[in-house]
Length: 232
Ligand SMILES: C[S@@+](CC[C@H](N)C(=O)[O-])C[C@H]1O[C@@H](n2cnc3c(N)ncnc32)[C@H](O)[C@@H]1O
Image (tube, rainbow, N blue to C red; front, top):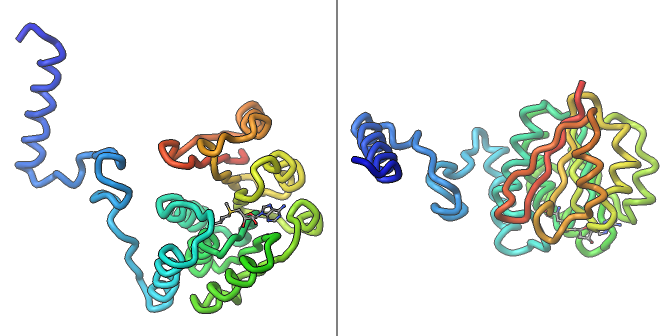
């Protein structure tokens, strides 16, 4: 076969056939876009306790019935994974809305023994988030704050393991400048909407040009998430 493109395609087909014959199809990566957002490879989050089942049920209900500008499910799951894998004890969220992303973070914090401080300027959404945390049984792990986050966060003094920025898009740099020093070494700064709506270029520059930080951008075919490690 002289055509290298056809030869590569034939090799790939034969490799896939061999893997399928070995029963290894689950290990063949299929792009999420080709599978739909709830793809076969990511499945559903499985509760490992009654407490987790209760939180996941409220997450599902908020997603279906009470969401307001909430992150997509994939990004919620990513937040949970990040918080749980670094053993986060204190997560700060800017932009609570009705509590959807907060619930994913609280799912992690219920396991790590941590807590969430989350800021929302809109009274109705702040109250709905409180209710959602309560019915998920995790209000005791959350401190929902009503007010302008730019002013309210200046009261924060304790170290932060994970900072999640998802409020006013033009405010991201101010949030980073005001809270970056509280993020512990080895902690994460996660910023939503790094693809859409267009992010503030000053924020992107700040997290990609500082040698003390390492940033990757994920899920950029959707709203986009920036994940920044504060290096040790
Ligand atoms: C994109 S939504 C947050 C979605 C939420 N993180 C979720 O996934 O469920 C942004 C929220 O930030 C709030 N917000 C905007 N500016 C704010 C500010 N200066 N202080 C506090 N909250 C603010 C808005 O009222 C809105 O509810």
